[in-house]
Every structure is written in C-alpha cells, then in structure tokens.
Image: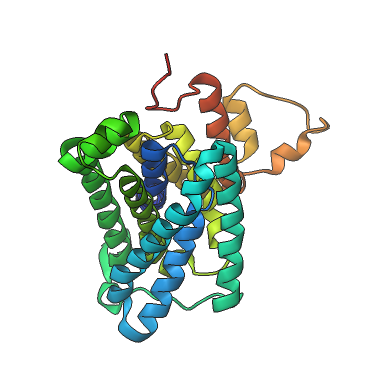
Length: 316
C-alpha cells in the first residue's frame, strides 16, 4: 500500500507540474492581457513537433532550445498581425479568433507532418533510473521534467513580482497611457507577453512529447484540462495555477492507482440503493474509470462554492 501511494504521488507530481508548465503560459497571457487563448494547447503541440523535427538532425537539446523560441516568435506574429486587430472588436471576437486558430494549427500540423504518431524520443543521457524504490524505477527524465517545471514557476514568479520588467508589464495593464508617456512601447510589451506565453506552451510540448507521445490530437488531450486549471486556480493567478495543477495531477494519479469501486465510495458517502435500482450500473464503476472526469467535477464544485477560483480575487 505504501509503495502504491509513493509512486502515485510521484506520478501525480510529474503530471501536475507538466500541466502547470502548459497552464503557466495561458495564465501569463490572461493576467497581463485579459485574453483567454483557446489556441494555447495548439502552440504546445507545435512545440513538440518542431522539437521532433529539430531533434532528427541536431538532437534533443537543440530542439529544447530552439523549438520554444520558434513557437514564441509565431505567437508574437499572431498577436501583432491578428489578435491586436481583433482586440478592438471585444473579447468575443478574440475567443472566436483563437478558436479558429486552434483548428488552423491542427490542420497545418497534419498537412506538414502527417496524421501518424512521431517517434520523438527523450535524450539518451537521461535514459537511466534516477532512483529505485520498492523494486520500481523512477526515470531521470521525469526528474528532469519536475526540475524544469519548478524552475519556470520560480522564474516567472520572480520576474512578475520582484523585477522591474514585471512592474512595467503590470503597469501597462492598468495605466497604459502613463507607461507610454514614460517612453515604453505598450503594444510591444503585450506582443512580448503573448510571445513568452506561447513559448512556455511550446516548451511544455518539447518536454511532454517523448512521454505523452507526439501526434496531431495531443492538443485536444490536454487543452480542456488547461482551462480547468486556470479557472480552478483563479483567472490570472500564477500561484493558483500552480496549486490547481498539482491538485489535479495528484487527484487523477491517486484515482488511477486505487482499486476502489463505486459501492465502497458511495457507502462512505452514506448513499445506498438496491441492485435493482435504475442507477445500478454505478456499482460496476471504479475510481480509475472515472479519473478522467474528476478535474471537471472539481471545476464544478469550485465554481459553485468559490467562483473566483482558489486564489482569484473577487471583484468589488
């Protein structure tokens, strides 16, 4: 039992921190620009595919460096020549624009790389067990994923709250005219923020590609979960996104690792009914089967009891 709990916790941390790596870019964009980018997960997918192509010729590490940069540049171009013009028409137009962009990117990926799964591999230098516990190995690459995710959180938090750049960015949101009068290019700041946000999504794709496989539908797999994380954590809250990512990662990991059935779970909640009840099919379900819907159940509960999210600020 202890073995299952420890490895479920480790796997949950890996999953949660990977989700944060993806959600951090979306949180950054929303908190700085007020844009809820539906195409964010598509930039994550582009990061994986660009890294795969680069790794074929120059290895994994070059892909890790240049793929996020390429995705970030593409994101900046999208903001400059698309989103900035659409922004004048309001948030609905922005949502429709990014929603259409997501489909466009998915079709482009299938056109250039094909519909099949790519054999994107982690680097050989990290192909060894970091440690062995209860006879099971925890790979060095998963430890690398944890390290990268924690580094991103610390770096973003420092830049946004402690550095001069973060002060200028936050001032540009609330007082754009004042910031412009001080000699700062506000549109360029917003373009940079969007580019950095999409680059973070691309970095998540580079890291996740070898583990979660690289295929055209990978943006759909995590796309909805990312929005769940952002809402649960509190729109625009980096710390909230971090906590929500870990919470969802651990919740799903514990559910998958458990062998608890619905009869035991319902009995714990004090719910009992006869096997002849119309809902008797519930008795055949187990926690691993319902693990995929647990984040959405948590989302509903958070919206009911705390609509602003875990660390979101209530508007006065």
